[in-house]
Length: 191
Image (tube, helix red, strand yellow):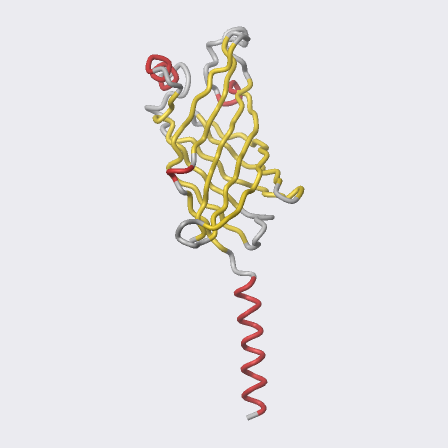
């Protein structure tokens, strides 16, 4: 009997260690997430817009998300700058060419915790058919959703050069800033 108890205790310890280190997956709450951007027009005013996030997941082996991986897809055809004519122009082959490149994707290569709720996330952004590495800053907020399950929100910011992705190359810096600022707000539910 003593042997059986020892084996049971050992098996429980092994199973518990695997369970506590098991990866958890978090799915995007589309209703509470969007990918925003800002570009400067003629050096005078900032034009803001957004894309709908169609899919995103975070996989993490830790509760604090250090070392997590994230994949996000946004619908380039959903671009919204609050002006229909401008949206049509941004969708055209002069900028995003959404007929050829309907999706914007990001896949992380590193997700590092740098302070209590702050992270530096590096990964590959694919935009306009071009994939380049980018570095983003993320701030974590956590809570419990209405369904009583854990919820994680990330406020993400960063910049990239639009010309590196072949976006709007016919428009010089005097017309549109080369730098585009990303500002995403995302909410994830633990699955």
